[in-house]
Image (cartoon, rainbow, N blue to C red; front, side, top):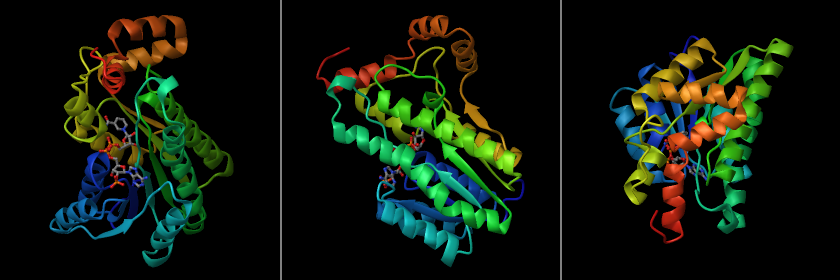
Length: 280
Ligand SMILES: NC(=O)c1ccc[n+]([C@@H]2O[C@H](COP(=O)([O-])OP(=O)(O)OC[C@H]3O[C@@H](n4cnc5c(N)ncnc54)[C@H](OP(=O)(O)O)[C@@H]3O)[C@@H](O)[C@H]2O)c1
C-alpha cells in the first residue's frame, strides 16, 4: 500500500513497546490511528503524545483474546471510522520456560493472543477492505516465526503460525487478484523497548555476539518500507542471523548445530532457568 497519508491504521498492542513505536511511525507518515490494548492509561498516554504531534488518534480498550471484544474493535474501525486501510496485528505475549512445566492455560492464552486474534481480526476487516478496493495487513511475527530456539515452544509455534497465515493470505490475494495484501514483520531481539528489553531487565538475559539486537527505529522503518513495497516477510535482524535462517532452510541439521554454537537459545534459557529458580 504505497499511499499512507490520511488512511486509517488499526494497531493492536499499542499501549507500549513495538506497538507504540509503530503507532509513532505510522502517525508520522500521516495515517489516522485506531489504537487498541487493555491498559487504558498507557494507551491514552501514547495517544496524547501522538495528538500533540497532530496525529488523529482514537483509542479502544480491547482484550484480543476475547472474540466479542475483537468484533467490537473491528466495528469501530469499519463503521465509525470509515474503514480500516492497514491492520497491524501486533499484540503478543511470551512465556518462556521449560515446556514440561508450562501451565496449560498459558499455552492456550498464547495461541489465543498471538495467533487466533490476528486471524480473527483479519477475517473481520477483510470484506470491508475488498469492498473499498484497498488494504494491507501487517502481522507482527518474529524471527521465532522463521526459526525456532529452545524454551519457546508455544511462542515459536504461534509465530510460525502467523507467518504461515500471512503467506497463505498473500497467495489467495494473488490467486484472486485482490487489491489487498499482507506482510509478516519478523524482527530479532529489539533493544530498549518491548518484551526482550523486559527479559534483559528482569532476568539479565542478553542476546550476545552474532545473535545481537536491532533498534526499534530500524524495525519501524523496515515495517513502513515493507507496507509500501508489499514485501512478504520483513526480516529485521543482524546480518549473521539472516545467514542462519538460510542455512536452517538448506541444511537443517547443520543449522541446528550452528545455532547452538552461536548460543541462539541462551536468552530464553536464562529466563527458563530463572523461572525454575536456578542460576544458569
Ligand atoms: N520485543 C522484541 O524483541 C520482539 C521481537 C520480535 C517480535 N516481537 C513481537 O512484537 C509484538 C509486540 O511485542 P513487544 O515486544 O512490544 O511486547 P510488550 O512490550 O510486552 O507489548 C505487548 C503489547 O501487546 C498488548 N497485549 C498483550 N496481551 C494483550 C491482550 N490480551 N489484548 C490486547 N493487547 C494485548 C500489550 O498491551 P496491554 O497489556 O495494555 O493489553 C502491549 O501493548 C509481539 O507480537 C511480539 O511477539 C517482539
